[in-house]
Length: 366
Image (cartoon, rainbow, N blue to C red; front, side, top):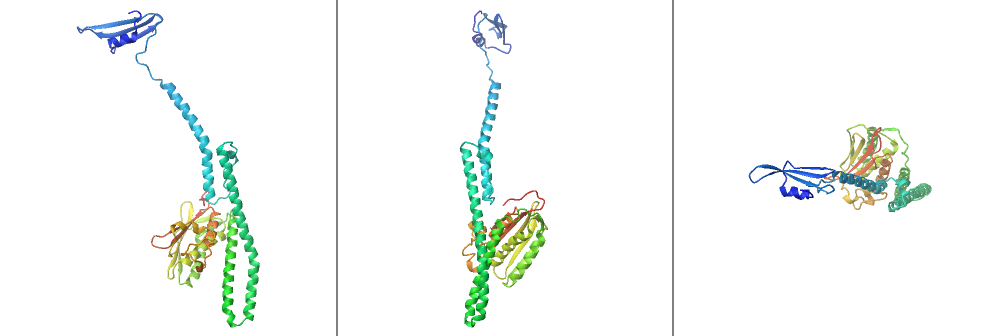
């Protein structure tokens, strides 16, 4: 079959398992096994002249080139995605640190040097964080300066009050007692503001002395229980572990004392404030639970803000000025720890202090 279309020929004879197509310089020959009407087997031969193209019967899919193209495009897409997403991840991490109280959180100049929209975002974020840090430090410095300035007139007021008591008659004692109570309250407020300013200054950032949490809480609890007895209340302590942390013992004691005083103030008469010292693999855990009315769920985080009080559960008449828990939070934060509060289902508020153990390899965050 000179000049035949071999593909059409093969389709015509419906090739079987013996199909064969051979090509060389002289052309192409197709050998197909077929069966005649009488049942006899024949071999049909088809040939093409030199120079004629043959059409492939079963074209193959180009798996190799397509796979290579998919691989290359995948690598390019991954590189582009990382180029865009990595700086955004750093912005997210820095925002989490800033929200947690790390005022020095910055994304960094390596990303801020970019000249695209992401670079603009990073530079704006770092500028915002720097401004917030400056404002917070200025606020703390202002509180410290005002408190120091109030110390002197308050001291003179106490001296004048004593002189007035000696000169005044019995009828003036009621008014003088009221002046004394207000002066004592002002002195207490000034002292707490100074303590908060010292805590904001990170005095424990370089402290590495070992602190035995069990012994420290025992001393604080004994003092709190002695004061609570006069209010027909009590404080109990259960030490389930003896953890050791690194830091400033005075500052940690101040944090625990402020939490305990807050619990004693708001637990009802003839109830007990329960303190538990325990530990995990990486943290010392101090739990203080009272039996008061608790706080609204929306206020559980805000009670650690300076001068914040929950009304009517935490009224001014109770003696609180809204600084005790703020001082405690900052004191724990500078040790790399955390403090949180939660309502107890059967009544009361539970405050949990967590501090990284000595040698735990890092802080637990704030």
